[in-house]
Length: 585
Image (cartoon, rainbow, N blue to C red; front, top):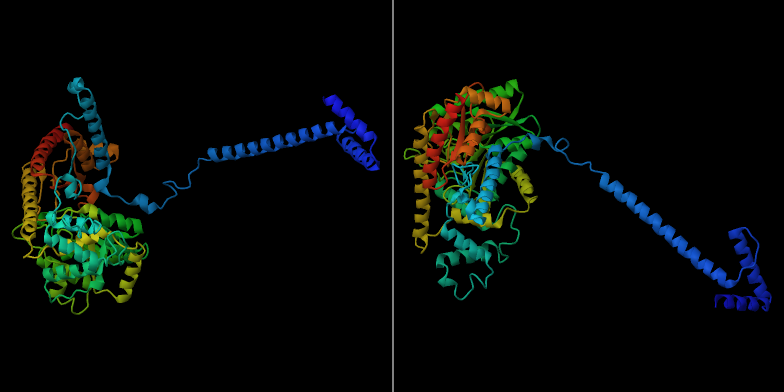
């Protein structure tokens, strides 16, 4: 058929007119250019040849594209160089340390996973229940490394959670539900309605608030402060910033204080690491002043003057702030009224911004001690009236008897600051839009609970008292238990949530091994305690515990686990300590 078609085409071309001859000549020229041979080719052959050339070009293009793509892919996949490394990142992040979540806690989390695997294996195969465990002396990890009450069993207070639940629920499922009064008490419903209608202006708890915090809640803080310090002590709601716990507020204040690498802040030693870590992160200088362990972790003016003078004269540090933690973390100490007045006058004299960390103000267990705020001290010494002090105080829902750490509720109050500085702090807060609304609500509830004539008042007060009394009892269990261990000395925890004992007979062999492992001796001790007992403590070296050369070793422990767990823990610590000393002596 193809041959017949070619003959017909050739026959038609012979009988065509001159236009046909011209086409024939053009075809002849095309073939000549392609082959270099002058000849006459039938049209059917030309058509087939054209399709072949078209297909050939498509194949060439696809092959070229595939090769290019493959080369690009090869280049992409073989480039494993990282743009961000530990060496190239901000070295202030590398430098900062936070011991309460450091090496000991990391090892505790690993052991916890091992214990879970062992438990799962036994559960899956009952016949393996007699197999030996890697950790035969304990079945669970007891975390006493951080002040996180609800993580170790403390139950949340009922009324605050009822109010919070009603605020978070949509109205038709919560405050406006026809059967809601059969589930929630009337005072919780009324408070939730007030928060939703007045505080949140009908927007709900999922919206942003004012960057300083909801105005209604800030007024609740004002009432709390005036009830605490007296109505004569002035308080301005515009000088109150609600924050994600006290930590975010502390970070903001340190951010505006540390203007360059010469700026320093005085911090107590031992101290809570949020201050040292944040100062390191911001590139500032830590100026330590030592608390007196032999005087119930008190401080004295001579030590403050020594520390300040050394930083200014010898190190050239521009000291701009002073941190006071009362009640003390990690020491558990409670400072006297005279000491607090000495501190506010010292800060006024040297033009230092006073950062008053008062988050444990409700945790005072010693009958002869009481919490005395820096603001009240500033008022009683006349500094407030003469505008002679710059003071920022912090409080939080994470501590006290609430223990609502995960809610991230807290506040800071500014006293004696220029309005222009407050405006800059407001701008800084605005960059984060606002703090957690659940945290703001919990702060409001902490500052203004049910009224005395409300149906929930008695039960709410009783719940708080029960938690407080249990904390007081646990503090005594730990203090007496540790003090009875030969080679351990422990000051009485008058407040807060911690004991900070000293190991007075750290054996030389332990010190030598710690040096070989390039860790602190009390880190070695804490790791050994963990592996032997499952108890997680924080090495005292992480808090900057004593002057150089003092050879103080120790650890910080909370007394937040249950009374039964704390009693067992003290016994386990004693057994381990005796074994540890014998092993390394």
